[in-house]
Image (cartoon, rainbow, N blue to C red; front, side, top):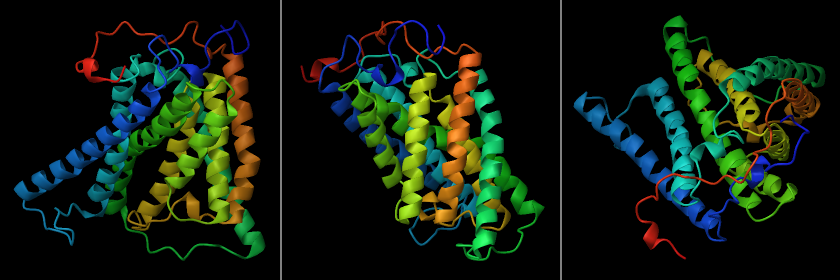
Length: 319
């Protein structure tokens, strides 16, 4: 099956399986939120217990202080908890294979993910170059002066931590927005525009306070990667671009001891949006071309039913 071949089930409709009822996406979203809150609490509580045993100092919140690098790593790990929680909600509530949130083939296609990452790297590099060029041309750098270089002794551990956890954190956000939300709304409506709009608004809101330019960029990114997810039949292209962008940005922050900074893309100026408007369509076009050239499977041949054993507690679910 190629990107334009025989009919099948598109990615955003995979939650509408034989077990689908109107209440399952709603209940699944509640289960996802509650399980994520529990998982995040376990992460931080576990870190606090280990810190107490290791006699770590206590911060102003009364929790064990792990320092900037490990503390930031805990925040990334907390966001990564979205992945197992999305899988759990898909399996337990929607009665489908968790892998159907990854792609139409029921798994994360790692080789294709690597191809997308190779395209994402020059895209993000050009985005940074273009943004800085616009800053230079306009004489408005839009950001405060960075601190001093932290030295290899602090930078290397930070980068190693980022290499391990940023892909998981980025994937967690993609599984929530381009995965769960896209499919939850898509279970009700066939046209793609409404699922795209809902997940885009949620993703932008997740990034906190910002500028109109920053929110516009987040919406643009969400719509582009959401469309690309459906077009390629999986989350790989979105995860790759998200992870590379975050790795580059956070590594730059780590180099100057600014991992604890609260700035996000939501606070970006118009120069960043202008560069992204030019480069995002290029990324989408290249990924779409590569998907067609590699004859990537982009449609599921049948509804995403499951032969998994009945999960415990289903008798308590609404009928």
